[in-house]
Image (cartoon, rainbow, N blue to C red; front, side):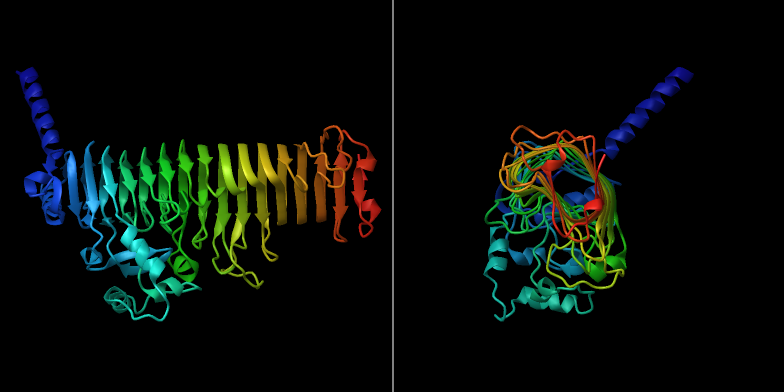
Length: 518
């Protein structure tokens, strides 16, 4: 009898589980599979029915659906099956009323995102289907807008909804008042899953979790036209914690993956950092950058790992960017096992002068880059690496280990301290393999270059302090290996190298005793 009761209890549990996972087929709620009518209300009815039951899966069988925005609630999964296509309307009025959102790091009320969730838990968008944002009309409006022309009804509505918002240092976009919606934006949500789907033609940023915890983005394909789709970044998790991005394919009209945490005063006021992110096994074709941090990073970015990725055809590979006024700290970053090819500009960029600015006293407006480590990198690019701090806040604690660059130009390091380069080969077609300017505490170990230009040093040090260059082994015909210049250069140490002292040029302004051979 006890055994029978146990079996019956188990069957009841199974029945309850199946019921809790019930599918809500949108076609049963009036959605047309031939896109002959908007399915917005039918989809809402299916979601409401699932919410009433405590949660469930809203199911899109194969077919083409036309819809306005879809708002997710807690415990809802959107399942877009293979053969299903969701085509989002390009009628701007469908994305009203305006909702709480964030645009480039500034909190606003604006058009509803295409998929939107606010303070929801346990939500998912999954499947093997396609979602298309039909962004062309959105892109055209922005590109065609001229300052001073009459404001549209949408811009007037934006003005009414955003009278008291905190503005960034450059409020141009906010004053323009037409902010395209991201494709998928989840705000203040927990336990978010986006998996398997193909996303194309986003009006603005494509996947944009904001202030979320525990986000998984897996095996997603994102395709936005590179030349005609401005600011259509791929994946932008902003001010989130515990984010995992893996096995994605991305080709877009801006950065492929970008980590952000708010812009200027609005970001610092919210004070929600981006932290605990892993990005792995992704392929990125086209886009301004492969994986980018900033420039909106005013609340800080920390504890990030990027590994096992391929960038092919992006403008840059790994890029960290900021400017005076942002504030925030980017720290504890690890990048490993990356292959880059056909990179238009720099393979690696750490730039604190992303825009022109004037030096100012150190304050909460001063950004910081520190404790950033890169290893096992192969890159074919125009420029190998560019590190650029600011006078009042050098980039610090940066290391590059086991890297090979095939480039036109080499590595440039400016306004930095505590820099280590180990086991690096830079095959630059012109200029020095390594140029260091205004830097304190530099270690270079086993740097190689095939350059044979007798007038160009492999390593150029200008106003560099406390440097150790060791285990340097020039190729044949390398006549000039190291050049030291700048009156501020001091304590330059060369140890255990495979060249003679005559391969080192010491300019007249440098005190000879500051260059030591060991």
